[in-house]
Image (cartoon, rainbow, N blue to C red; front, top):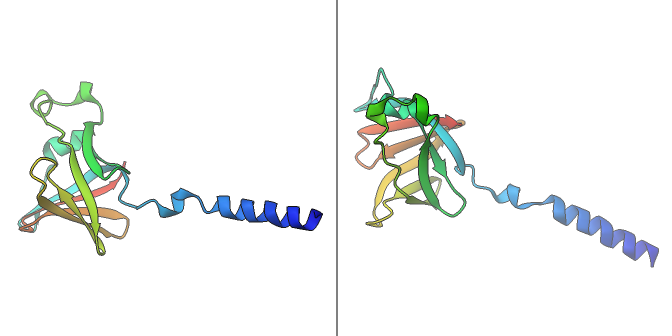
Length: 130
């Protein structure tokens, strides 16, 4: 009986160590822009993206927020954060307009960096964890 109880406890410990964090998709989290490309050319400045970050959530939605609203230039304060959706599509991701339900961007990883491109591949944002 003691052996059975011991095996049961070991089983529970092993089972619980395989937590849901193991299934967490690496895209989930907060991301800050470090580079922007337009038509293949690296932009010299990040514009208002310098003051914001992207939030990709477990519930398959995305939004954003200001890093520090008080230090954000007034011209960037009108930046809106739309609630959009995301989904995994093979080895990449699709970011979907929350209203129209249309894929607007694709996302993938280059090393640890998250890269998001518009569908025409004319604009690309490179993110690191925030």
